[in-house]
Image 1 (cartoon, helix red, strand yellow):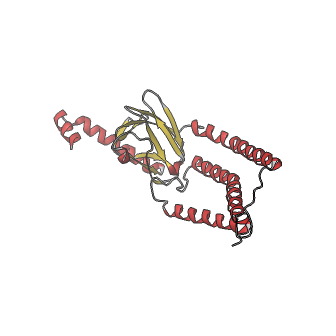
Image 2 (cartoon, rainbow, N blue to C red):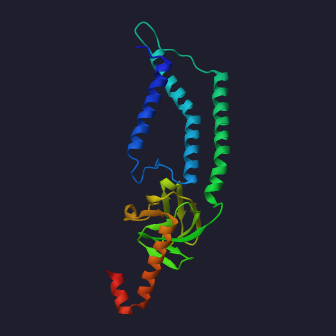
Image 3 (cartoon, rainbow, N blue to C red):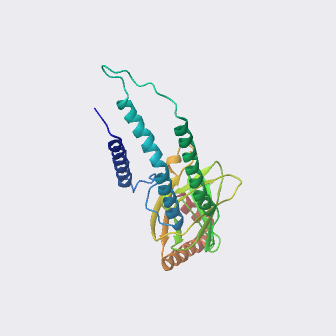
Length: 256
């Protein structure tokens, strides 16, 4: 059986396309990191990902394609011994220098993105995040609101900065559609930022934090500004009602 190099390359490309289709079919899965990007940061991350894939895939296809080609082309067959050639100094120098240059190009293109991920360009609203086995607590200093075991609610198309910490072990606030994944550690403040389109998005803790780690989910509701302000007023009214209740009634309400 004779296999030509171009046929091997086409086979590899077909396998990559099929894998991509299967990945896209699982777009609603929380753990699928190839979700549709809904923030500028996530779109930049996706662009760098595809750029990196485009840079490295030729090496994978060429190496695996040549390996399969050589196996069949120079194998031992009746009436012919297997080929025994080895060493090609020029080829070895080339396949060392070219990948090294490729890695430098990828590193340069990625450095600026990593810098943008770590520091918010500006801030329209700050939310404090406290991670604790096995829930998230969100505090809005500007509105005197604190919620726990509820979705994080933020206004759309605003720069939101999350200042996160952990009350016990290391947790990780991961929202694939936002292009965000940051560890929250005891005794330290971690900065997370995003500017999202309206919608409801899901994520989860991505750091193994204990036996109920899988249940430490993240829900984020991104609302138009008028709907967000209506939510703020509702939460402020609920807080005022709680303050007006007798201590025994409030305790009973909290334990339900």
